Length: 331
Image (tube, rainbow, N blue to C red; front, side, top):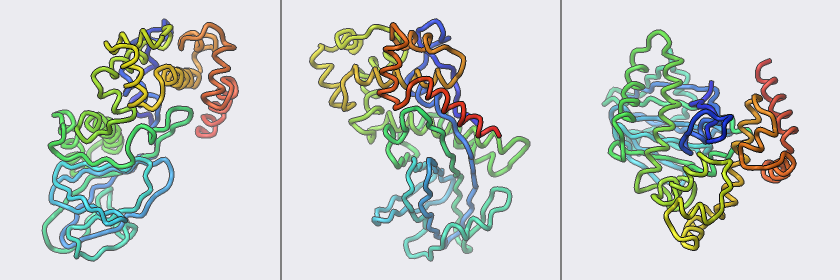
């Protein structure tokens, strides 16, 4: 199953349209092994969730009731209806309880109670409902998502919550409460969309980081440049022309870009070109000379040299390894 799979979009003729950087990033990734559960717990209740290694993203939304989310360092977060929390490639264990005095069991014991994706557990007190799940992500040859996003996201109900985001959560709650034909496939796709909505909400909220990629696409000046690069990878960009896109002086732009992203504008541009080139190579629909031209290189040899430096493999070797990986997954 793929995430949201738009085509590779830039201004080059072999591309068909334009796309924003966030779609550009997530459109290259693929979601796999989606699991989901609806958890109906009655007070008193408590369970410990162990860390799970691998490129897995874990998430949950609190539908009704209340809960306390506690980490190994004893940091505790109070959860309210509508709250969403997401662990991104984070194997940190945590504990969920209705009250810090409640008895805690291992989540593996709770999971055994699942019937058709629904778990009922606890005492005879007030009801708390979660919908949640996890998925793995194939990030072969693209920017590791954990370098862009924080390892843990907590979005409160009133935190830049769009109507669309809230409607998505309502759909998830309804579909897991009363599954119908095609529920498994539908719920998986709703979770994929939930992840993207969560990232969008986080990027626009006041708690988002002041440095890094999400900070850049949320900056009113730098976002213009990030979008311009994404739309025009084949252009002959310079720091001066990028500064004009940002409507800043060259020196002020260069300093701000490096401060927020930790690298120069042209270093960032080179990396992004290679990541998009990798996505094109994986598509198997374009020649290397077309790929080179699409991302701004006049010759295949100059492109191949930069690709090897950034990706660690020559383009043809990269293409071969991807083909082998894809073949092994279809067998």
